Length: 241
Image (cartoon, rainbow, N blue to C red):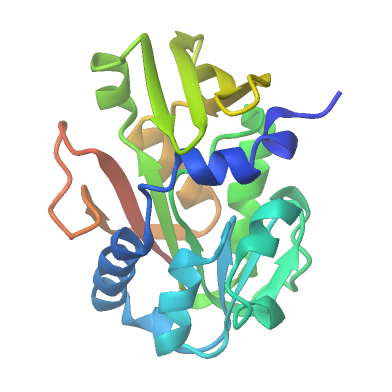
């Protein structure tokens, strides 16, 4: 049986998350480049790049930046100018050589999809791919805020798709189950998301084991410092050895 992340990232996903747009990506990427100017030089991987909204901006500053995603659908939706710089693959089996990347970016919570063992292995892999002083940028949710402000149910509409969502915290994972209805045809489908809720300290401990040290934490895409009420936890790490 396919995992949820193997089937969900398609046209419906892109439509429902269309508010995560190019302007948001521009603000986030420009702030990241000020905090970590190392991302402007050498091979930098935008991992789980989706349609490439961050990568498109990054490549204006770094022509060696490239992207990777598992979703054929999202990769096909990327601008044609990006396609020579996109590869399809599973982040649990990254096809790059150790010590070859100047930077890795993970935007919009693509970490925590897997089991704890697989998530820890992924962090170790990310650390191994970076050159000394290479940068790992991890854009993750604020796990404590999510737990405190969880909205159990809601309904949103985008275009011809209506999504009825139920959210719950099951063990240490945030689970979102959705019934999607295409209003023009009446067709329905069930989809879900399941992300491990890691507190910041646990993320930092994993990063240390991967040879990374924390340089800075941001709480918003525009660069505000992280607080307990920040919407995001954006960690900027550098390869220590």
